Image 1 (cartoon, rainbow, N blue to C red):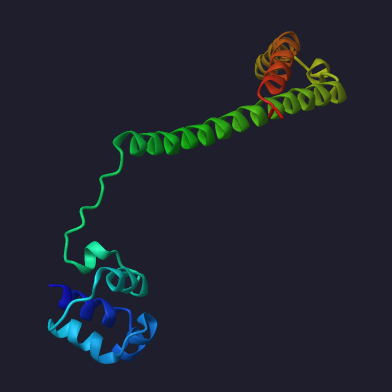
Image 2 (cartoon, helix red, strand yellow):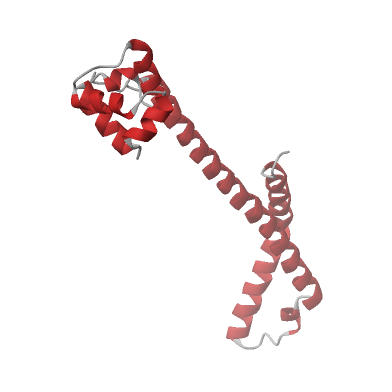
Length: 169
């Protein structure tokens, strides 16, 4: 078992018997005897051999190394950390959407107020002798009246929402 392990590990590391012998300060024939199973290294040489091959002594001796199972709590905490990061990113993205939505609503209200102010209620000068014109004029007047009454309240709410959803530093 030891002889086969020495030979296979040496070859997997790309070392020749001569190169390994130089690393261990032994002659090539010593390595050859180990690999043929004619002799075995003493404990000091076995430790040097494991260091030269960058392999644990237990692997050289053929012991099956059982991979330690990761601590279940550690695995769970790592998964929870990933989930928390994803939730934080999602929360940040939603906060940004609301923040810019509130800012857009403020801008829209200001623009509509400016348009109403510039146009100065043009429907007041319409000829209301036709029923279609009457209905449209009353509809525009109702919308303008409703907008002028509700827009300041909505604007205040949008400003407060924009302030509350801003990115805190």
